[in-house]
Amino acid sequence: MIGLPEGSEVLNMVNYLENWLKRAVAKDVLSPFFTLERAHRVSSRKPQPGMPVRVVVAKLLHYRDRDTIL
Image (cartoon, rainbow, N blue to C red; front, side, top):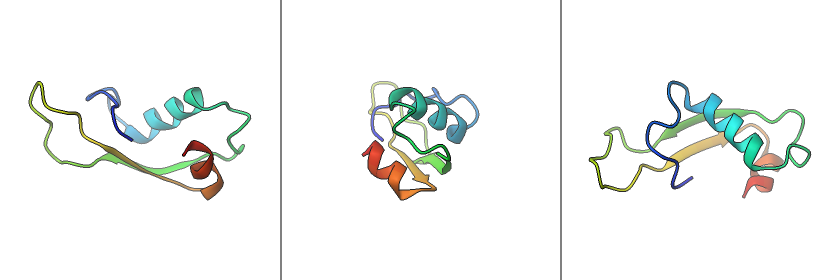
């Protein structure tokens, strides 16, 4: 995912992204067992002010939820 503001995840990227996706995508479209296995930002260094934000990579448990989100 591209464009999530730096530091918006506060402490836990997985919990933040799960809640964000549930709000962004209609809850009735996602499976009742929607689970995000892992999520992290790609680069290890925080970018300097004015630089583009880092990309977020996420792995979902069910491929149907992945296809719905895509």
